[in-house]
Image (cartoon, rainbow, N blue to C red; front, side, top):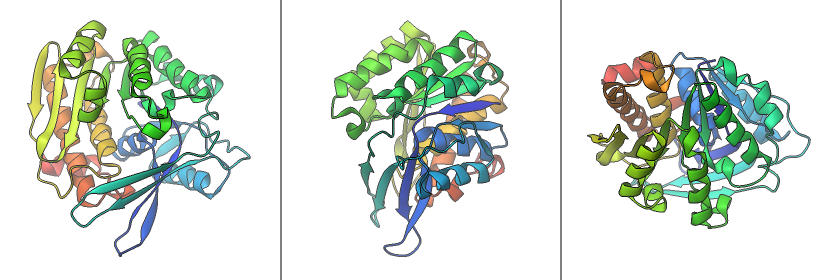
Length: 309
C-alpha cells in the first residue's frame, strides 16, 4: 500500500448540472484524498467504517470504483454515516451544512487500524475531524503514531469543523499540537493558521517538530509552504471559486501523489524542490476540481494534471 487514509466517514451532496439537482459523493478529507491518490495510479486504501444504510453502501462503492481498497469494509447495523450538504451559488460561493449523526465517531477502533497493516504502507494520511471525540480519536492517533514509529511518512489535514468540536477552537488546536510530533506533512488553511496562533506560531511548531507545513488556499492566492526554515509561495490559478467541496482534498491528493511519484518514502527523501513541485501539482488538481464544483469525477488523473504543468 502506498497510502492508507484514516478518518471519519462522510457523504456530501453537491450541486449537479441542473438547477436544484444534487450529486451524492463520497466525502471527508481522508476518503477524498484516497480517491485522488487512487486516480493517480498509486495504491490507496481507506480505513474507516460506515453505517449499513444507503449512504454507507454508497461510500464503499464509490471508493472501490475509484481504485481505493476499503480496509474496514464491514458495515455496522445502525445508520450512522455523517452527512454534509453543500450548495454553491452561481458566483462560486459555498455554503456548507454539516449533519452529524450520533455515534458516527465511535465506529473506527484501534483494532481496525491495526488490521490495516500500517507497517506495509509508505504513508498514512489522517484528517483532524476524527480527533474530536469517540473511539475514532484513539484509532486516528494510533495510526499516526504507529506510522511515525515505523519510519513511514505521516500526512495530516487540519480540518476544523465547529460542529465536530462544539465550537471549541482551543480544544481543537490543543489536540492538533498533541499529534504534531508524529507528523511530517501538515496541510492547513488560512483560517486554521489563525486558529493555531498565526504564521509565526506555525513556523515555530514546524521547527519544534521538524514538519513541513503547507498552507493551502487555492484560487488566486495559491499556496505557501514552510520547509527547513524557508517560506516559499506557489502562485494560484484563476478559478471561479476560491474553494469548492473536494477541491482542497484534490489539492492534497495531488500533492501527496507527487511526493510519492517523485520517489519519497520517508521524510529524509524530501527536498524543497520536491515540495514545490508537489504544491504546483496540487494547485492544478485543486483548480481543475474547482471548475467542476468538486465532483468526484473531476478529481484529476496523473495524465490530466501533467497536461497543465
